[in-house]
Image 1 (spheres, rainbow, N blue to C red):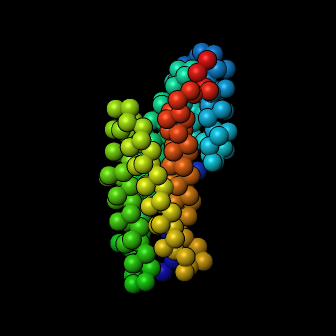
Image 2: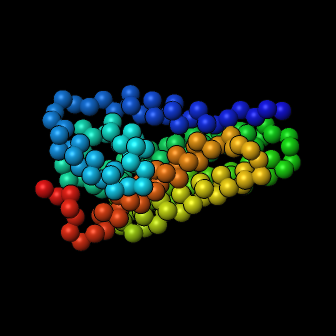
Length: 188
């Protein structure tokens, strides 16, 4: 039985995001500069730019926390879609060995979606950046663990989704690290 892939989720989701944020007419030069600075120091520059570019009009010039919060909301929404997909794959699959892999991923994404990312969002809202960073880091590790369960197979049907969640969580950790520095170089 050929399993459907969740790998089309990332492009679809990014296309959805780009239509969800309709920018007001205003100057965005300083916003673009801040976003570029933030993303250049993140581990995944292009993913950072693509994900956060659409929100640039909604951020103040010095709103690093706003970018981190938005990225958390985006990754939480994407992880929720991935959780639904992996749950469906788990239910549809009849191969015991592959089903154990999906079962593991269901458990990992359940933790990501229901515990770690929501707690990270709440921590960001409270200004508790250390907790937000820790929760984003754990979510990244769990997405990576899901992908690693497929190590015995040639390809994972969740590869793109797992990478996206991992990469965006790594970007979030990078952004939050800027908030934890005493003298932020981003304030003008």
